[in-house]
Image (cartoon, rainbow over all chains, first blue to last red; front, side):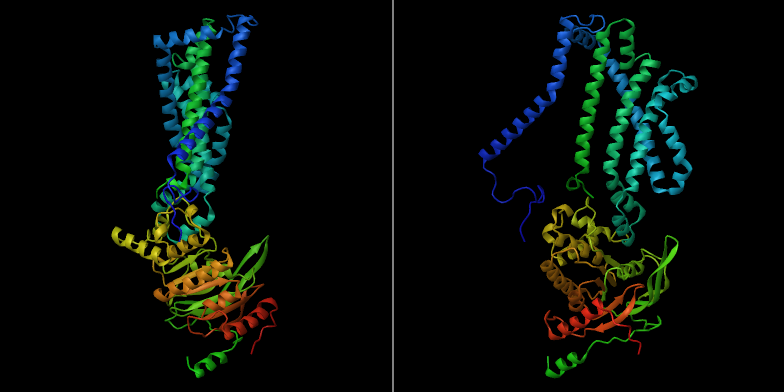
Length: 284
Length: 281
């Protein structure tokens, strides 16, 4: 039988170790491809930046409404050195973390419940879907009356926003466990604990990550709006404050921060997903 | 083999009489199926899948179940293993009537059905989860059975890294590791290319020789059924019922082109392709 390097998988060439020159060339190729990809991806932002600069130079829009990039850069440096941005980001991210932790965990459990139990789905499914269709912010007026505009309001709104996509994803994942593997688990008489750990959990990993990514995206959207409408701190509040002072540069800085943070978080979650969803990398 | 023995074997011809044992099989039978019937309703109209199927499998015997597709062969295995408990008649394992999943019965499916996120060892070990074994013995057993199917070098490989034949071997190890008395195989080599199929048939016989497990192997491959089995049960369709039982009655190792097998094959072909009216003597 041919020997296969189990660490690297069958697809990888095995046998002779690659000479250093070949390895170096491969690394250079990889670096080249990475640079090319970055260039392609940054073409649009750079073009938009240039357009912005030109628009400001030619005064197509008044500087009050669309401050030139240099102002925005200066403002962001000021906000960073003054600590406003850092504290706003810290506050907003803490809220997202709590919202995700509470909402996504409850959504996970609820998803398991309605995924596994047809009866639970019959009891709760319709109500859940009805609640899910009302956007989180539709709950804001009534929740403000109930909870005030304190921290609990934001956490509840964010938790609700995270709960829905996670519950839907997990329920979907549970219903998509391959029937062939469920039959094997039946025939092998797997104890419930083993069945959960070695069949259910691994099978729903991709659905979990989709749910988590959607939850995070929802959390961001809701966070900014709730901070704008009912906040005294955080990035959303910073942006409203900037608008009230007619300092649109502050608003733009806030938008940039949210955009970059959301993008980085999405990249991180995709990385995690790729890691956990590759069967070769998982241990049973 | 003496000439006399050879002649005796040649004389063991097709026995088309219908076995009508009414479920009172001797208690020594590893498996006895008594007048098993199965039907379900399809869009409101009842459909009969199996009717009055009775046979026994002796300890260490290999019984082939042969039939065209749609004759209920796979359904029969699902009833025996307990995946489907809605049937009439009785099924007894080692003399004890059983309905539902039974630890003494293992099953190999046509597709390997390995868990993609577990290694070969992890997959084989799944079958021991229900047994309360100390860790050391568990690991030893897993290694033993992985060795037995010739996958020692791949014990830490994931299913994706295995070829089709290797994956099916791992599935066989998973079925055998709990040391069941009865192994059910549902077209176990049907998805493999023909050369590999021949090799795995020989490997199965080698494993069987060491384990003395009773095997019921469902197949639509006549040669496979005759080469592997002590007896071959030929099913006819609509509803699925036993048409005839063929005693192969040859010692092992067998020659694939043994004249006896060749002549049985011709008769089987006639039975399967062009089933004559049932002979009710």
